[in-house]
Image 1: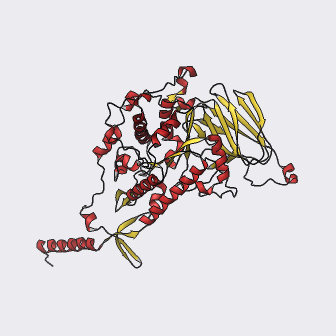
Image 2: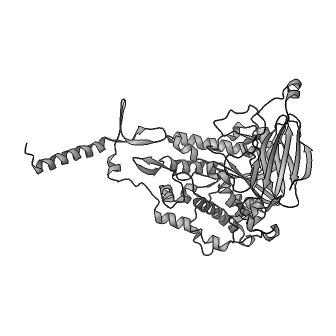
Image 3: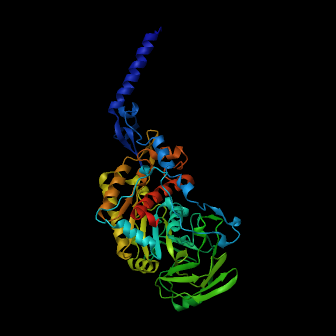
Length: 508
């Protein structure tokens, strides 16, 4: 059979024409998968992935952000490092003695920086005094800030940077809250529990929840014996062996200098049903001996020292462990910021905990500001505008629940980052994400909550891909790298500082 070249060419043109014609029949996001949708044909019992005409011809703009924009945003704050001497990750071994670490108030000169590139914090119109009130709190004798968030905060990321900056401006030292049983590496304090500690978190979907719901302000509990909710009868109690547990607190290998200085330690506990003896040693010398209060209520066992401990050991002895909500390592004055990282959480668990227990703990901690950083974990599961609006309303429900139990607290909400998912082989921003960010912002502002758009600060739609390319975010297209964490932290701090500074330039 003699086939001419013209026949081959015509055949190829016809085949290509048919294949291109099918793009007009392909529907956007017709193929539904677990956490995403792709273009194609969805027939009864049959799904065929196939590009739409717009996708094939690349008529759609996949990314609003450009590499130049990202570089402009991420380098606009770098000169701050030249203006502020920073004790970034000081090696403890190089410090001869504590007095050599001078913690002096810092001033920041933004005159050489184009601050128009900084995405600013939005404040509710109904609260014109939001900034001045916040400034008063920061300038007060003691200002505790609770920073709640998802896995973006793990290991004291973001929080440690903000804490160091604010303590440099307003005073204070110490890392604040540290869980006893840690499930991730903690960079801001050296806290080592004995092996018999277990951790129970309200936000952990793999764990059964306690019916008493007493998870405290930090939403998690550590115990050195198995959990019980009622005291066993006297006969059973008599046969139980006494258990011992320890918590060792020392200096970190690497951390900001301010975070390494603390002399006020709080051991927060509740649900203590039976006698527990406590001994505190500093450099193997016994400095305190007590018993915890066994009335099942929340209490804060305090340890006050003349200077930062180098090797503090807390020993506990009892048949039944209390619920320990964690440690606070502070200086007793100035700014203290607690990092409360809740892996996998979407900020919707607070109202599921005991209101009485939460209130008692906040009355002791006296937080004046709450920063909430959520939204990313819910993005893959949101399918339409109704679900977005319901989630935003539920977030406000949680915030209002917290406000009712922390008198006079101010709330700043940090929205989700840009996040990418694979669409037809390309990494693109989740389509629902821009609407989620906008809805969260509008809902927060209407309900007297300030809002900072991390999504816009990164560069908006498509920016995550560029952050990954610049090694500022990981290959999961969700989490920041250490370098990216520092930049996003600086962007938030700068936005906050510019507002605080505008109130009274001389004060900062």
